[in-house]
Image 1: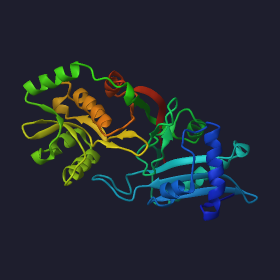
Image 2: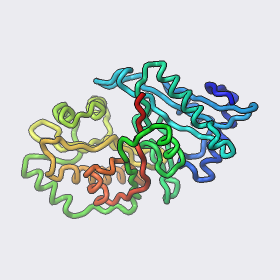
Image 3: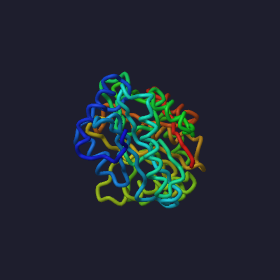
Image 4: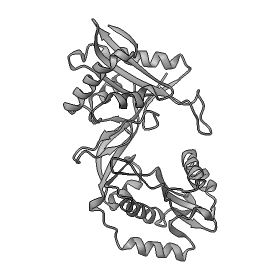
Length: 327
């Protein structure tokens, strides 16, 4: 068996292998096309694709990646190499093909100084997958290793431990109903001096304090970039005394009809007041305004925010594991 990096002539066999796995419902990914493969794997900085051949026939492939740009606090040394996808032809499984591909992936990135390997939503290669039990509705990023696929047990045997479990949740927006208590809570917040709703970016409210206390450089970057735009996308925020103390958005609709947003958070100094519930329901309303058909998200199975999502009408759709192996 020969393990090497991807060559252009490998693509037809990779597409056939990938789409066979999709047809047999072994994976949740959408069917693969050449343009999608090139966009996701070949044009992504820091990505490497490894293939396994035997007697000139492709019997498996693996793709991995590392970060090439960093948020504050991140470096080449303290960030992991990410495993994106590994697939092996059915007739070649349990013959060491997957292990050989994984060895090549780990050796390549270990030579770059990586001390940790991970499967998580932080991987720069974002692969769309189809929500089970829906009319083809998709989520834009696999939030870890799908616990329902054979790769989960394979990685556990190879020393990858479960760092945290994630649940992907789904809401068909045709079924969404805003409960009367949302407006009651908004009024209560207003009496406390907190205005919750669509955010006017011309106000220029401060948000660094919230981001510091939440510990998210990503949300800081999103808010900084979006509020600096001449025509920003809608943002839902809770504002008091010139400070943003909760936010969700920016509101967007993907071509597939999914309502997209970057996340939701409440300043720890203002928790347990109902801010997140008001903003999250506003978010669903804004999704409907822009013509979104559904929304998806993922969160930790132990995250108390799951109660908010369930109350809003979301349902658990699939469970994933963020997996880590330390060298």
